[in-house]
Image (cartoon, rainbow, N blue to C red; front, top):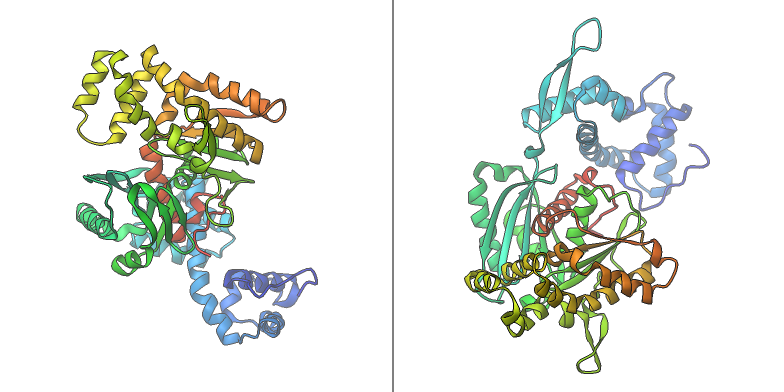
Amino acid sequence: MPSETRLKRSASPIKLANLCCDAFKDGKGKRGSDPKKDFFRCPEGLFSSAKKINSMMNISKANLLKVNGKTMASHNERLVLQALYEYGLLSRTEITRVTSLSPSVVTHISRRLLEQKVIYEAGKRQPGRGRGLVQLALDPDAILALSLVVDFQRIRLGAVNLEGKVAEYQRIDTSNRQFSPDAIVDAIDRFQEKLKDRWDRVMGLGLVLPGTVDPPTGKVHDVPTLSLYELDVRQELRDRFQKPVVVENDVNALSLAEQWKSVNNSNSNVAYIYLDYGIGGSLFLNGQLFRGSHGAAGEVHYFPVLDAASGSYRHAGGLADGHAILTALPEALGSFPPEMAAELKAAKSTVFDQLDIVVRWALKSEKVAAFVRRFAETWGVLISALVNMVDPDLVVVCGTLSTALPVYEDIIHRKMKDLVPGFPGSHVRVIPAQLNTGQALLVGGGACALIESGHDFILNCGYRPEK
C-alpha cells in the first residue's frame, strides 16, 4: 500500500473499498485488471493489501466483503444517478466514462433503474457511423421527498422532486397556536391519500419548524410561537412511516433552498436574514451550513437592540418582526388607503396573509412605505452585526418582508455605513432572496430529506443532519 495512504478508524466502507482499489491500481493486483470490476472477485493481490488494513482495523476479510457488497452497490447506483442528474442525457458508455464504473456494473444498474422507472430511454443519438447510442435520462418525479412546514396557524405539505420543484401541495390552516405531533401525523396521512400510488416514490420526510432545532438528535428545543419546548418527534415519525426523517430550522431550510436553486449559490460566505412574522438568520461559511455548537448560529431573533421608546434593551424579534408590525397596524390604519383597510378586513385566513397585504401596499403607497420603514432601523442593526461578525460576501434578505426591500434598503445601507465603516461594509451586497418564501421553505425541507435519504448529489454544501 502506498506510504502516503492514511486510514482512520472512522473510515467508511466506501473509503475502505476505495483504498483497496487504489492499492490494487498501484501494482498489488493483476496486471491490466480493472480494480472496481475485480473487487468482488477477491484477487490475491487485493487481499494482500486488505490484510494490512485488517491489521489496523481488526476486521476480517469476510466482514470486509459483507459490509462493502451492499454499500458499494448503493454507492454505485448513486454515482449513476448523479451522472444523469449533472449531465442530463447520457448513454451507458458515457456513464461508464463519467463514473469510472465497469460497463457490466452500469448495465446492471441501468436495467434495474429502468425497471423501477427512475430513469427512461430518451431515444438514440447518432455519434457517427454505426448504430446510434441509446440515451438515458433521469425522471425527476420518480424520486420525491415530503416536506412539511409547520408555523403559526398553518401546516404546509409539498412533494419535492429532484429538480427542486413542488410536484404536489396542500395547506392546512389551524385555528390557534396549540400544536401537537398528532397534528403532523394527521396532516401526513391526509397528504398520503392525496399522493396515492406516488407515496412509494417518497424517499424521506423533512419537517421544518421555526426556532431552535438540533437535526442530529431531531429534538426541537424552543419554538415559542407553537408553544413547543424539548420535543422529540423524529423517532415517532420514523416508526410510523418507515422513512428517513429530518427536523430542521425554517431559516436553515430556506437558505438550503436558495443555495440549491439560486444563481447566487457561487458565493462562499453568505448571511441570510429572515424577516417575516418572526425574525431569524442562517449562515453559510466556506460553502457549508454553519450551525454553531448548539444549532443556534445566526439566530438574530434574540439579538439585544435598544428600544428608543422605553430606553431599555429588548430582543430584536419583539421590536421589529411581523408580529410587531401587525400589532402596530391598527393605530396607523386610519392614514392608509381605504382599499388596503378593506383588504385587511376581508383577509379571514392567517396573519401571514395580512402581512403580505402590508408588503404589497408598501410598494405602491408612500404612507404604508413610511410605516414599514419605522422597523427597518432594527433590521439595519441586525444586518450590520452579521457583517461585522462573519464578514460575508453577500447578505440575502428573505421572508415576506424581503419583497419590500426597495422601500427600506437605503436605511439598511445607511446603518451599515454607520456601524460597519469602510471595509468590509462597503464590499458586502444586500439583496432580496430569489425564491418565493413559501416555495423556498418547502423546497428546503425537501432538500434536507433527499440528502438524508442518500441523494446528496443534488446539493454540494456538506449538509449532514445526522451525526
